[in-house]
Picture 1 (cartoon, helix red, strand yellow):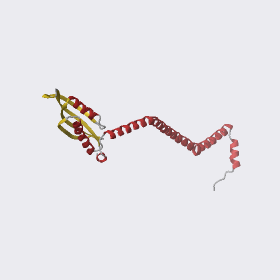
Picture 2 (cartoon, one colour; picture 1 turned 60 degrees about the vertical axis):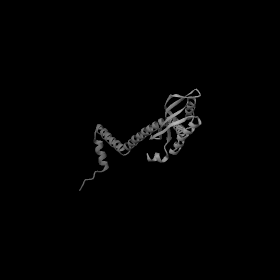
Picture 3 (cartoon, helix red, strand yellow; picture 1 turned 90 degrees about the vertical axis):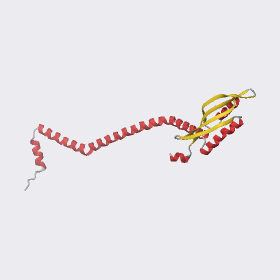
Picture 4 (cartoon, one colour; picture 1 turned 30 degrees about the horizontal axis):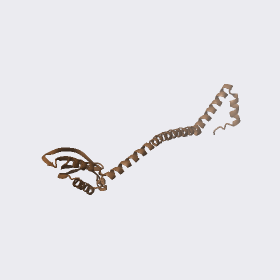
Length: 204
């Protein structure tokens, strides 16, 4: 049968101990209490604090990133506005489809007739498709007075479409004069552009 130890007996035994041993027992008891408090309360609090510090650091990094991006917004808005202006200009200047381009090419001959220029050759080349537009070379061989030829090319430059003069060579026609005015032969290469249709863009 197990022997029961009363509380009074334990206290009596402790009283018999020396002062040093009593202090040591108190220190051990206090250490046990502190250890239990650390395990059950302080350790979870420390873990929560550590986790919160990590969250704060992560949030601060996000804030720094967002602040840097926000600082770029005005510049990005300006770039977007510039791109929109370029797109609007391109849509205005570029024929919107192949049919519009054919009408533009036909206008070259009409303008030549109006300026007194004779067409000896009008040869559109094959179309080269780029990312957002298509381009085509047009070879011209013309004949006329110098003033008429210059007036013709000046009129082409005033078209509300993108047409660029790639090359031009003028040469007098030997023995051909009209009212003491020399008649010139002009060989030119034009580059005309058109925008791609929605179907072409989707196909690409």
